Image (cartoon, rainbow, N blue to C red):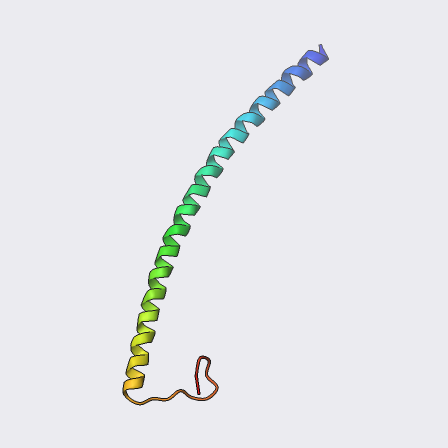
Length: 80
């Protein structure tokens, strides 16, 4: 009788474990998809932001050259 009880309990444990694995797997896939979409959105926004910064840098460089500014010594990116 103890053997039959152990087999039944083992079957229940396996079944519940299988169901929990399926539920968490589905949830995990859903979260992965959401994270991927969020990452894509952030990448697009960062690319647009970088393009905006590059444009401002170009404009500021043009203004600086127009007023005759010269690079200061020791600054990164300065050419002598």
